[in-house]
Picture 1 (cartoon, rainbow, N blue to C red):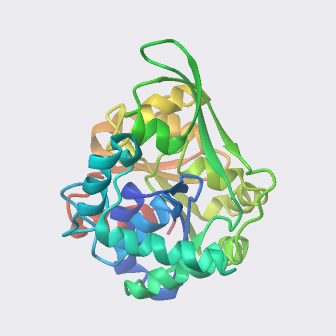
Picture 2 (cartoon, helix red, strand yellow):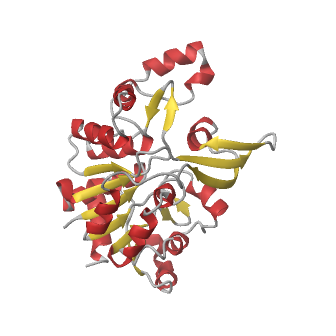
Length: 315
């Protein structure tokens, strides 16, 4: 069975740990958001591909919720003593090696797809990891500064990390998406998959940029009957992250049903958490098959159970 998954970072990584127990090796293709990518200290950082890689390579720091396990931050701490403002994005010492490798390879002419595959191999990831595009796409957050009321136009990482998501969001856009081309293998993996999964990722800044790349939304819509999604919204709020601050700005209700309705043209099945079981009739009224289970993935066994429940909706 071949599966193509659309993925963001942390929520997707947890889920994919379980999915890889069911769909091992290259039969699983993970199409990962790259609109969060940012240049830090001259280094090309790819937060979502790295999160997925670290999760599947079993080196992710589950306790901290980001980065690598057994990480140190001596370089960032030293930089903070020189220029605190320059140290707003915390790069771990081990993580720096990934970014140094990526930046060097890109400067030498390699594509982001080639570099992503090389990093995945280094961590023993059997699944096929594809950036959604090799081109530059950048999520921009249009917001109002909390203290001054000044209008701001921020890179997503500036909004989320540097300013701690404290500013009121007015809009979201994906710069460069219209001109971008899906990375090699993206459209083919969707067309050839037996099943397509939309991971429990932020619908605005994780899945949204992937679907904004020309051809991707149409490719998923064409396979709607083979596509299932898992809600990252539980009990009216995100399991992690700041999706609730972004979703209203783009017209998505902050409920599991609201996200399902947002995806109604792309999916035929939707898995939500037990606490939202009462929303099943509403989701099904949109023409989407729906079921509930415990979607809080506290470990890999629970992640596998969630993956099996999601795939069962299509079989």
